[in-house]
Image 1 (cartoon, one colour):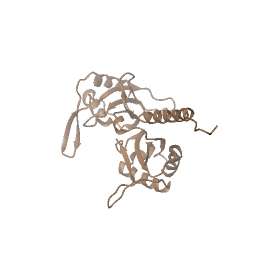
Image 2 (cartoon, rainbow, N blue to C red; image 1 turned 180 degrees about the vertical axis):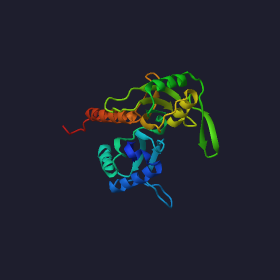
Image 3 (cartoon, one colour; image 1 turned 45 degrees about the vertical axis):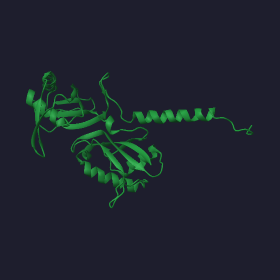
Image 4 (cartoon, rainbow, N blue to C red; image 1 turned 30 degrees about the vertical axis):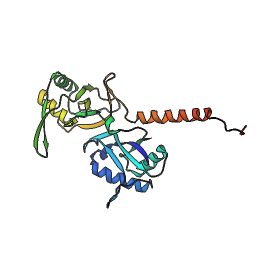
Length: 259
């Protein structure tokens, strides 16, 4: 089997698409694009699609990942275009690589989020961020299947900072932009948990729900403070293989009598 890894987005109104809704839409796109999918065994075979760390319903994302298994080899870029054309606008396939390494899910250890807080003065947001950063523990509560769960939302946050409103999005109302880098821990700390923490420690309460977008996810690089591209190892392995192939052909022995 050939394995292809894809990065896709949830934009605009499609951010309200649940993960199950996306699964159904994606499987329909696979059929429309006539992708030669590998299927699981058993009484109810399913296409072999592995999803990794999907964003919560209601949040936008520029960095969702999945992996598919094919029975026939396909060019990743041509496959990406076919699938992108078969999905609604907003659910966009933006990157595709052939899987040449293992452990994609193991490389999704942190996320970068943008939180747009309409109606919040940037100065108030900056003061709240300073209080949150200075706290050793910020306890928040979340409703779970077994009742209310209390956990620390501070320890998973690597960086939280304010950003100014982009020049191409003018507004008459105040608006604070937060950038959040959070590690994927158990229990998962989500952007709404951080907002709950800001409300608890600094009384920051946006008048309208925050617009949340995941900008990236991958391995956290402590040296640079950035989240790295999880598909980069596959690209590097493919590049190394393509470089090695001509070199191997050039050094191969010439059969006797072929001169």
